[in-house]
Length: 521
Image (cartoon, rainbow, N blue to C red):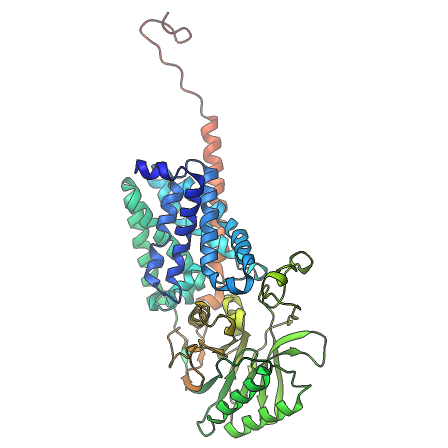
């Protein structure tokens, strides 16, 4: 241990180790999907931070670990953003600097049982506060939220219906704190074990008491995934391919057909021929078709990404314009300052325009759908509001074509399970090139996933759901409760320090050979 401590005395070595251990939690997400690893993935990072010689060094370990986590989580952006990926990771990683200081403050040295008990609530609250800040759309949104690694765990999905993905993040970090204490602090194992028992109790209570969604008759939903279509005339050829696949659905009693993001590359007002072809497909299949138009509008200035519902007579008038855009991919934040990103990567040359509000669409057969576009499925509040507004089915139209051979498509598709479980509504994740997937109202998978090597029209029998989950009713309460926990802990710490400062010094002890004032005489 002394040899290791000596080796870590080098700031560069320590920073490198912090970045490496900070990246470990990414293994719990798709594509590796080692969901169980999330329960111990933070332990090496915490053990390193608690041994920092100073609070400043602990903050640096937190920053470097956060950099490693953000870089690993977004490594698939490197071919597109190049060096700017490192800049973004470094800026976002700075959010973990206070968290590093917090870990050392509570777990450094030989912590008392009281400090360990506080750490079980305060350290996860610190992590959750970071997720609150970085979930702002301008900072990249809630991609890589730690709780999202539990998307395929049935018990975790039940917890998501109570407190959203945020409650999962809190409990996963609390488990890591408990394991770190069990490994490093023997005298404080009792509160650590108590934390593990409390987590198990919360999970069990959620399993028993959380309301389950009410489901009705199943509706047949079809996803059309055309696969990779590249080249100068790709928009026309993609439309032709989607049209061909959609015709295969005729006679299959489908209630709704969903195309992926940017499935139509022309404004339908400018291309009435495409609108007529879509209307003919709706008549032929007997179903409404939800397409996604990525084009410059003919009725207003600017480029929009819009979900448009098509019926037998053409566009029905139901339209949703994407509200939350992908930083750099669809717009450049503070373009006057960061516009140089377009010269070093594939950042947006022109900013797309934002929609003004969410929309619930009636397909005409009693089914109410709540569309989202791509990146928006990462935001729990958007699906929650759609459920509040009466959506029976949630939809996300996506395209991860640029990242075909990376972890991004699987990571994106996994978010649908969480949005379904949070809201008690089935979720359809439809893409151009995979991964496409459908989840039931409990977050369980429905039917086959369409991978990145698949081009097909696939029909799913989906149970529309009603009722209200705790998460829909009470919202992001864990997310906003975390700063309150930190504030209360901060007040207690300040009062404790002041009380210690006011305590009188003990009088000097008398000696056998002198007075207190002049010892030894």
